[in-house]
Image (cartoon, rainbow, N blue to C red; front, side, top):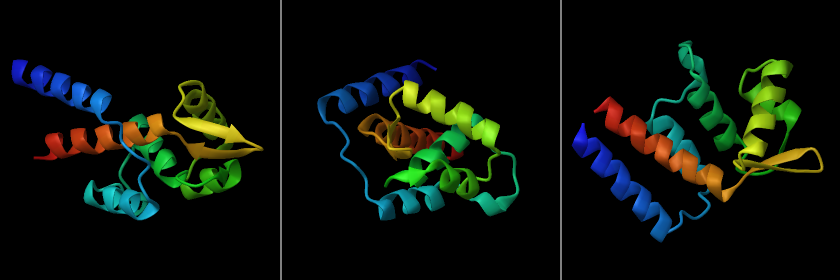
Length: 120
Protein backbone atom coordinates (compact mmCIF):
# COMPACT_ATOMS: atom_id res chain seq x y z
CA UNK A 1 0.00 0.00 0.00
CA UNK A 2 2.77 2.43 0.95
CA UNK A 3 4.67 1.67 -2.26
CA UNK A 4 1.57 2.58 -4.28
CA UNK A 5 1.37 5.95 -2.52
CA UNK A 6 5.07 6.57 -3.11
CA UNK A 7 4.70 5.66 -6.79
CA UNK A 8 1.71 7.99 -7.13
CA UNK A 9 3.69 10.79 -5.48
CA UNK A 10 6.63 10.24 -7.85
CA UNK A 11 4.27 10.22 -10.83
CA UNK A 12 2.64 13.43 -9.65
CA UNK A 13 6.05 15.13 -9.31
CA UNK A 14 7.06 13.96 -12.79
CA UNK A 15 3.91 15.45 -14.29
CA UNK A 16 4.52 18.77 -12.54
CA UNK A 17 8.10 18.92 -13.79
CA UNK A 18 7.54 17.84 -17.39
CA UNK A 19 4.09 18.67 -18.77
CA UNK A 20 2.61 16.17 -21.18
CA UNK A 21 2.30 17.54 -24.68
CA UNK A 22 -0.83 17.12 -26.74
CA UNK A 23 -0.98 13.56 -27.98
CA UNK A 24 -1.81 12.94 -31.61
CA UNK A 25 -4.95 11.14 -32.62
CA UNK A 26 -2.96 8.03 -33.56
CA UNK A 27 -1.41 7.88 -30.09
CA UNK A 28 -4.84 8.13 -28.48
CA UNK A 29 -6.23 5.37 -30.69
CA UNK A 30 -3.30 3.13 -29.77
CA UNK A 31 -3.84 4.01 -26.12
CA UNK A 32 -7.51 3.05 -26.41
CA UNK A 33 -6.72 -0.30 -28.04
CA UNK A 34 -3.85 -1.09 -25.68
CA UNK A 35 -6.03 -0.59 -22.63
CA UNK A 36 -9.03 -2.43 -23.98
CA UNK A 37 -11.29 0.59 -24.44
CA UNK A 38 -13.56 -0.91 -27.01
CA UNK A 39 -17.16 0.10 -27.50
CA UNK A 40 -18.01 -3.20 -29.17
CA UNK A 41 -17.04 -5.39 -26.21
CA UNK A 42 -20.57 -5.03 -24.76
CA UNK A 43 -19.29 -4.71 -21.22
CA UNK A 44 -20.52 -2.06 -18.82
CA UNK A 45 -18.43 1.07 -18.79
CA UNK A 46 -17.76 3.05 -15.68
CA UNK A 47 -17.84 6.83 -15.46
CA UNK A 48 -14.07 7.12 -15.85
CA UNK A 49 -14.04 4.95 -18.98
CA UNK A 50 -16.77 7.10 -20.53
CA UNK A 51 -14.86 10.27 -19.66
CA UNK A 52 -11.67 8.81 -21.16
CA UNK A 53 -13.52 7.89 -24.37
CA UNK A 54 -14.97 11.41 -24.68
CA UNK A 55 -11.56 12.97 -24.13
CA UNK A 56 -9.97 10.61 -26.70
CA UNK A 57 -12.64 11.42 -29.25
CA UNK A 58 -12.40 15.18 -28.72
CA UNK A 59 -8.72 15.34 -29.63
CA UNK A 60 -9.87 17.65 -32.42
CA UNK A 61 -12.94 19.87 -32.13
CA UNK A 62 -16.18 17.90 -32.26
CA UNK A 63 -19.85 18.85 -31.97
CA UNK A 64 -21.98 17.49 -29.16
CA UNK A 65 -24.02 15.36 -31.59
CA UNK A 66 -20.90 13.60 -32.90
CA UNK A 67 -19.68 13.05 -29.33
CA UNK A 68 -23.06 11.63 -28.33
CA UNK A 69 -23.26 9.15 -31.21
CA UNK A 70 -19.61 8.05 -31.15
CA UNK A 71 -19.68 7.33 -27.40
CA UNK A 72 -23.15 5.77 -27.38
CA UNK A 73 -24.69 8.20 -24.87
CA UNK A 74 -28.12 9.72 -24.60
CA UNK A 75 -28.57 13.49 -24.62
CA UNK A 76 -29.09 13.93 -20.86
CA UNK A 77 -25.94 11.91 -20.08
CA UNK A 78 -24.01 13.92 -22.64
CA UNK A 79 -25.13 17.30 -21.29
CA UNK A 80 -24.22 16.32 -17.74
CA UNK A 81 -20.79 14.97 -18.72
CA UNK A 82 -19.88 17.87 -21.00
CA UNK A 83 -20.89 20.38 -18.33
CA UNK A 84 -18.79 18.55 -15.77
CA UNK A 85 -15.76 18.16 -18.03
CA UNK A 86 -15.77 21.81 -19.11
CA UNK A 87 -16.15 23.05 -15.54
CA UNK A 88 -13.18 20.89 -14.48
CA UNK A 89 -11.06 22.19 -17.34
CA UNK A 90 -10.71 18.88 -19.20
CA UNK A 91 -12.62 20.15 -22.26
CA UNK A 92 -12.97 23.57 -23.83
CA UNK A 93 -16.03 24.81 -25.70
CA UNK A 94 -15.72 27.07 -28.71
CA UNK A 95 -18.75 27.81 -30.91
CA UNK A 96 -20.61 24.64 -29.81
CA UNK A 97 -17.58 22.47 -30.46
CA UNK A 98 -15.56 20.73 -27.77
CA UNK A 99 -11.84 19.96 -27.67
CA UNK A 100 -9.62 18.24 -25.11
CA UNK A 101 -7.33 20.53 -23.12
CA UNK A 102 -3.80 19.90 -21.83
CA UNK A 103 -5.34 18.89 -18.51
CA UNK A 104 -7.58 16.41 -20.36
CA UNK A 105 -4.59 14.83 -22.08
CA UNK A 106 -2.89 14.60 -18.70
CA UNK A 107 -5.97 12.75 -17.39
CA UNK A 108 -5.78 10.30 -20.31
CA UNK A 109 -2.12 9.54 -19.66
CA UNK A 110 -2.73 8.96 -15.94
CA UNK A 111 -5.82 6.88 -16.65
CA UNK A 112 -3.90 4.62 -19.04
CA UNK A 113 -1.08 4.21 -16.52
CA UNK A 114 -3.53 3.26 -13.79
CA UNK A 115 -5.23 0.75 -16.09
CA UNK A 116 -1.85 -0.76 -16.93
CA UNK A 117 -1.01 -1.10 -13.23
CA UNK A 118 -4.37 -2.67 -12.41
CA UNK A 119 -4.37 -5.07 -15.35
CA UNK A 120 -0.91 -6.48 -14.60
